[in-house]
Structure formats: structure tokens, C-alpha cells
Amino acid sequence: MLAANTVYNSEPKDGTVIAMFSSDLVLKQAWGAAGIQFDSAKIQWISSAFDTSAMCAVRKDSGVKSFEDLMKSGKELVFSSFGKGGLSHVPAVVFNSVFGSKIRVVTGYVGGAAQRLAVKNGEVQGFCTSFASTAANERPMFEGPSACCRMIIIAGTETGFHRWLKGVPAAEKLAEKLGKSKNELAMLRAMNAPNRINLPVSFAPGVPKDRVQAIRRAYEKAYKEPELRKLAKRMRADLQVKIGNEVKRIVDEVLQTPKSVLAKIKEIVE
Image (cartoon, rainbow, N blue to C red; front, side):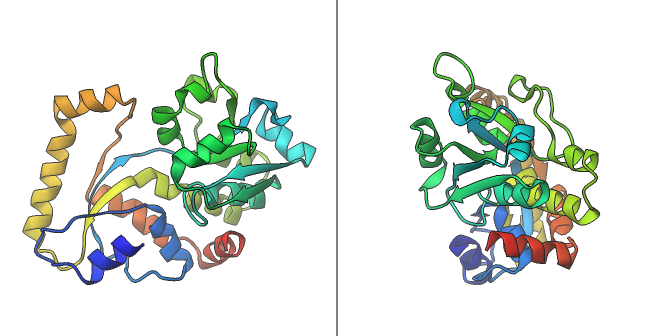
């Protein structure tokens, strides 16, 4: 938030300052979180690196084998999170609200590595974050001799074909199956939207349009470079790039979420 506020308001607007900050700030602005001093609708978006989805996972010894288990049993599980209102916190509390699960989220872990270490050590029973981050950084948690966890739900409308997601429900499809309301479906979409523009890069308003377009073209070209693609593959990072207006379209969708839905998200998050 400090980075976003500073680049938006104080840094030079000549194209020499590029901002990269967490995409969850767009949703925070939409629900009216304290401290926001920028307007995502006016930011000049350059690119985002990943189009992914939020997911939640539990330890295999948690006593929960599936999200259906979690809903029906009424069992409370403790999850770790690296930030209240962020990409590791909002999914759990929204799933609680929509599906009646009982996930107690403990915030304050310093980053994703610490969040996941708490799960590995058995300090907590599960966690939520983006699928892309987990697939790139934590394969031993889900496959091989040291596998300790299983995924139980993923946001969005489709599960996909990854082996870790076999039998795992897609949240929006599950909500439709259970007859959830339009507002509850809108909550699920708004919650997941920031993951679809993961690692966004931007200019503040006021940077000349020709410079914005030049940098967009540069990022688009860079993401196609064979060496960058090889590096991403080596890091197990599945790049799904969006440029310029593709990012803005999703930002606008978040900002246009019905006010009653945003008020509910704010209530359960804060």
C-alpha cells in the first residue's frame, strides 16, 4: 500500500518510476479499506504475469479429506496467513461466509514462506494462497515422500487438469450446485479477481501515453523472449501474461462489484 500510494501521488510522472504491488489492493480499494490513497481505475496498467486462482489446502492428518468433509463435519481448522485482507486471508473468510466452513485464520506470518512453514511443521492445519505460487514453490508439500498436504478447493469456475486438483471442487461451480445466491457468487468472483492479475506492473496517472505504450510493448516483447520462458519453466512458473487493457478490464470488474457485496466482504474481512 505504501508503494502504491507513493508512486501514485509523489513520484515523478515522466515514465522513470514503475510500480509493482499486490493486486489485492484493487479489492481493498473497492471495499473501502483504510489507507488507500489511489484510484485503481486511473492507474495505467502495463502488465501482469499470472492468471491464477486462489486455493486452500489442508494437512493430510487434519481429519479432513475434502471440502465437503469440512462443510459437513462442522470441524474448525486453523489456517496460517501472511496478511489480513490479502490473498492468503480473504479466500478462507469468503469460503466460510458462502459455504459455512469453519476456518480460523491466524494472520501475521511474514510472507508466504513462513505461512507454509507453519503448515509443514504442524503449527496450523492448512492455508490458502494462489495456485501458481504453490505450484512453483511448494511441490514437495503435495507430491513425493514428504507430501503433507492436499488441496480441497480452488476458486473460479473450472478446476483445471493439474493432478493435484483431481476431485477438487471449483468454488463457483460448487456454489451454483448448492443453490447459492447471486450475491454469494459475486463475492466468490470478487475474491478471486486479484489472482487473475497476479504481480501487476503499472504507471501512475499523468505519465505520457506514448511512454506507457512503449513500456507495454517492451513488457509484451520481454515475456515472449525464449530465455525468459526457459527461466520461468525452470522455476516452474506458468506465465499467463496480460498486457494493458486486459489488466484494466479485470480491475474494472472488481470496482463494479455491487456495493452490497463489497460491504459484506468488508464486514467478514475486517
